[in-house]
Image (cartoon, rainbow, N blue to C red; front, side, top):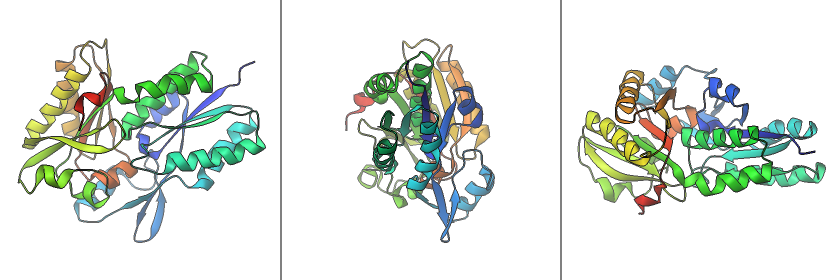
Length: 296
């Protein structure tokens, strides 16, 4: 008899409770750090509201972040293994977080105790709901009756098919967090220029384009996504935002206008991604063509 599979992701996935419950996806908590104090990076915002969090960043406060602690992986994984289930952990890009490696180390330790278990720690090569989209795909494969090994085999070839287009007011937060590559030479100090950022084929955040003005940048991320999902039937599109909900709604309307049949979800950028990307960032995500077309 095939063992049941549980899908786990982490605080970088930005999946709201509604979707985590719908697809039965658990997650392991990372932490934000401010003034030496660690706070669990809850995607349900129990410790501060999104507005409070991003307002602090607007006022010049800086949050740093931790990867998933090994003790947290133990806390999440052990009860699942005790129930006789296998685990597929969908991690944030290994270029942005060490959690995928930490999860694999804990998995190896636990396999000594649970030798019949399969535990996969999979680098999603993405972050935010790009990672979350990979986790949802894993959950759907589980619901089709796939084993942990089969889920891994089907996921790994499609990770580069997550199309991510994100724009920010500036690159200050990303640069401070070391989360974007090649930014200085690409942008210089041009005022009013808004970068468009993708996750490349190895999971780095890289700027691919510069657009003058906020409105133009919002239109451009939708245009780029429309190209990326061309030919897809009723694509699921996630619109994420760092406390700029009105603009996110406008972007969602634009998506529905430019991508007929698109199903849109609007959600917040969670505390971990938010700490790195800064207030007022906005992005769109969907499965589509391979992002290798943006070869650097």
